[in-house]
Amino acid sequence: MSVLLFFSIAVASGLLYPIIATIIKLRLTSRTASYPLFEQRSVEALPPTAQNYFRRLAGTLQAQGFSDAMYLYQGGQLAGTTCFLMLMKNHAAGDMVCAGDFHFAVKDFYRNTNYLEFATDLSNGVCINSNNTEDPSVFKPDPANPVFKFPGLKDSWRLYEAHRRLIARHAPGELRVLPSEGMEISHICSSVKRSLEKQVEYGYYYKEQPSGDYRPTWKGAVTMTFRVAWPVRDLKMAALRNRAAQTLRSLGL
Image 1: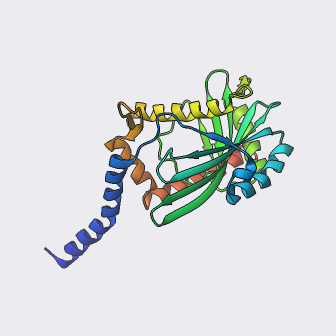
Image 2 (image 1 turned 180 degrees about the vertical axis):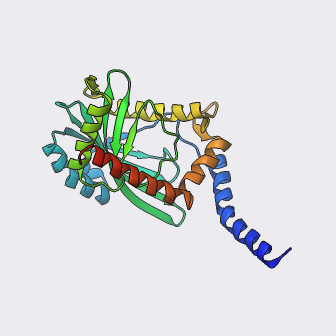
Image 3 (image 1 turned 90 degrees about the vertical axis):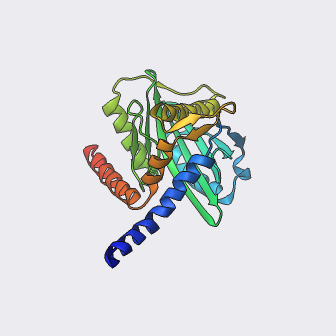
């Protein structure tokens, strides 16, 4: 074996080992609860990162027509992940907004990130979502429920205007539906569950019995790992940012 070939194999093995290890760990240990659970909390009971983000954002969203702020906590849905959400409704327009403050902690790794999304449920069962997440999705997209991503777009006025124009473009004249008063938590839980069920349909997850928890299949573990591995993640994010810029230009924004 030549020195160059030996070196190439060694480098490839070094690069692939953490990916393979992640795939195996994801497949064998990852589980998502059969039904997502959220606890309603006061804004004062949230950690400083969530309080600061939500309070800074709430005034702007109120000026955009949103009200009825509700604060939620979720822990344990995914190992090492804790999230805090702020939900608000625009009764006049029929839209909802969700701001999220996420905490990821696995061994020595810790990351805190936040995001903003506007969602509109239509009477025909379709949900259209526009968000500014800066992480690629590990799920297979559901073409029946379009998600428009604008990574890094922090301006809620511009993001919401993009969402409104996308609704006008893709669902002109469709009736918008808001969850009834007191049903907001059930609504978001059902939305999460529908998303997971769709991944079961795509073969990314299966339902473990008797717990009913969602577990990744080998297909799902491999696909989801590669979607966030270098250089796939960087390439996907570059393409996503380029697509977002094109969409904003097409909307006149």
